[in-house]
Image 1 (cartoon, rainbow, N blue to C red):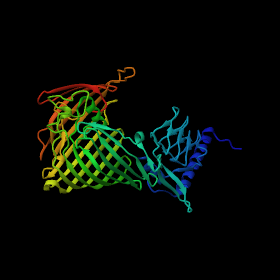
Image 2: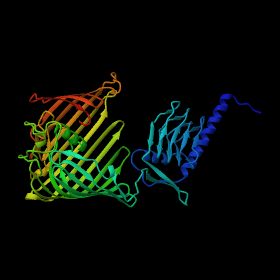
Image 3: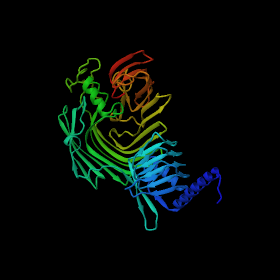
Image 4: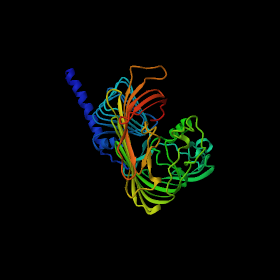
Length: 510
């Protein structure tokens, strides 16, 4: 019997393990696997890339986890279909589980990524994953084997659908109310009808507006044609505003009710609108492109310059300088506007950097007053980390109009809280508008207050202008914010006029 040196025996064992692993990879790679729809995000694209090269393919019957035992080595990515799986071995490449959870056990060494599609990734402190942990619980792939032996992976969203035909969302059909100086309390109520296993939903609403004393009917329809193509349509009588970009509905309702600061102008309209939207998905981005049409008949709404009473607020209801709840709405040009619509929304994010861009185009073919204009509305935002826990956030809004002057119901406004705080509420307006806000956020991590956490110091810059047919000179505000949990203190100054504004409040919005 020939006895080999210990080092030679170790090398032989390693060589045998590598040979077995390589053979398994070649056998697995020879089996045809097709993915008809990669789904959103990066996980499906990583799976596709690993399937194109040498890999180890393992199947699970979902009753017992696939186990990659300790002290074993895989020289190529490992893909487990049907999951779950436990991994304690050494893997050169990714480990991807499709249709289950991925459990990392002590001793695991993965040079690539640990990915679960349709499940979670559960870590261990006694192992190492160099490429990062990526759980994906929003979708999975249904695994089927065709008669010719081809494995088919079919995209399948993980969502709980309410398959009842009639439901009462919210509180027994009562939706989230809103509050403003024109309508008072707007109180929407109504059922949702679902068809074709909830692929088509219809909201039939009646909205009571306390200040106007009217009930507005409306219908909203949402449908999906496949996964990426959706259709949305709506018709009804509404109170419309072009200033929703400043505050959300909830934020504007709270500031109106509390201090009388309604940062929107309004008009009334009968409006019917429909859009068809298709979504393109990439590894780190999503692009939604839409086409549609709108028909709108508009007229002016209270309060006007002669208003003597209106909705109630805790403070500022009858401020003689700023008028607050009695601030009049600009008059609009009564009549119809029929338009073609186009839009695109891009969402991108990678390595802590996020960005969004929303562009909406309106091309009217029939306009009250025989005006010919084209209007584009742009919204953009970007955020990225800088040093340690510090970060930068930038947001912008623009309205660009070409051709004739747009009718007043297509004007946009800025000024006051939420845009340029040192100026009066919606002091500037027109069919041309530009606004940008930048914030440099500095968490004070060394200071920590029990329950409230650490304070945050923010450097703020705002610039904007609005006018008719062209932009006037840009107005600016600069200042600082100190925030602690929900509490905040702001100080801002207009560099040109030296006007200042100091405020304190709850930091639910900007």
